[in-house]
Length: 308
Ligand code: CP
Image (tube, rainbow, N blue to C red; front, side, top):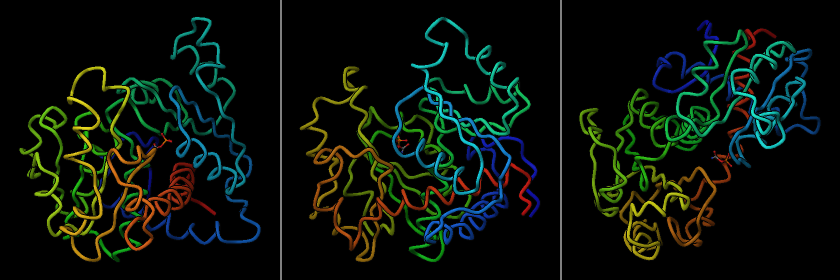
């Protein structure tokens, strides 16, 4: 399928065909990261700017490695070391970056919609690396690639997403993406962490973890966003953990071959117990990180025209 998008802003606007093209392209890139010399000349001469306004370990490193493995020149900018601290606006900063003629700008921003605004204003391709509580499309794509590689298919699988759904860009992107791929998505979390109107999308919502994960093929735990704890959306971490921490007992409710996912960073013992997070028989958490490089290589490649 021809891929002629300028930007990757969210899973909501990607078609099923586009998602399949990205996943198939990513599959073809997986092998490059296993080579002794992990580099191909595909994007030689292209320039990619990683512009991160929020902390990141996985996404920023993964985009940088992806660009480098395709031989692109990659430049990292963080808000704290840019002229934003001198009062420059995001738009002025973006226009100045545009004037240096990069090919792709990867942006993470705390404000929902920031990458979408930028995409309208600059001619370069924009990739949303996480915008507030809105979307995190490359995370959902790497999650889908991990599920596909482990299970062989996505359609018909029961995927239980547990935790702070309302504030999670990972959950939102996965709900859009997995539903388009034909998975049965169910959600569980405290009532204060569940989005309103989600059931209108045909998604089942529970307030008990135990109800949601019965017979699940995939259990996706979300990070409890400690920075939001001040807002009193749950009584205490201990209380949250007592009801929503996935552990050796609750995982038994899922299918015997269920996989456990988490986008990271993990709060061990709060949303997932260390024995489950580190159990190679079910946890695919580090595999998700591994697949992230191939997915981001695919996104950079497809936005660059997708030609050898
Ligand atoms: N999953 C994820 O987005 O992790 P980082 O915040 O470390 O990029």
